[in-house]
Amino acid sequence: MNVLKHPKLGVKTPYRYAQDYLVGNVKQFDVAASFFSLEHSGLGWYGDPLNPFGDLEGVAQVWRMLKPRGIFFLAVPLAGKCFIQWNEARHYSEVRLKHLNANWEVIHMERHQHF
Image 1: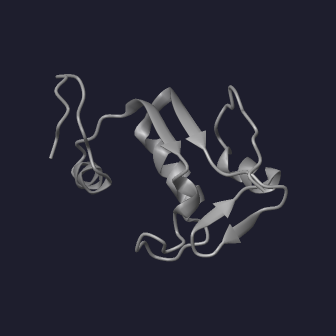
Image 2 (image 1 turned 60 degrees about the vertical axis):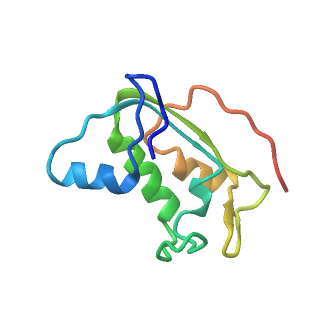
């Protein structure tokens, strides 16, 4: 149920966005945000298919959904070494983080290691 009351705000689920995309009825966004969610993509934790590159594909999908020069706020768990806490989440080292940030201009980065 859509409970937003502001006329310029709305909800678009990934399923609805995909439907609109297939018929060429999408508008790009100015801003997107993912706070501690992409690290779960492709691990099956939420019933999604297993995909070792699910997080990278998720970031690529955001890239396509944003306008040129759009802003993407991203937060993922950092660790000294990259590892997967099976099948819950990935923890990112500098190496995988570079792949996740590929094609993006990083404006600001806060580093707070979890492990």
